[in-house]
Length: 121
View 1: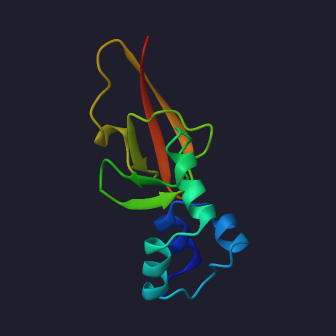
View 2: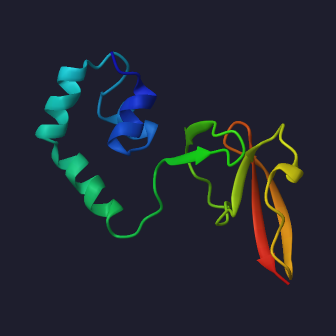
């Protein structure tokens, strides 16, 4: 059985939309495959809207140090990160910023990540 969160991630839709359309917990793989093969109008429209350049509903976050991965809803305040790392890693585990660049840190990315942004001075 597929969880509500997995349904949302696999369809690339928000959790609220899963609830709104009655796709809650307990969907079988067969039912999911049928939904993918013959998507309802609301799912077709959602996918069409996504192609128009809207922000993605889900983002895959991967630690550049250890490779840990999670899927999370991207936030509007997230800049384009140069690196992502788990909060327990040290900055010394990442490559040093290029000459003439300043490094900024953003806490609270996903459940455990720190986002690193290298910007030119």
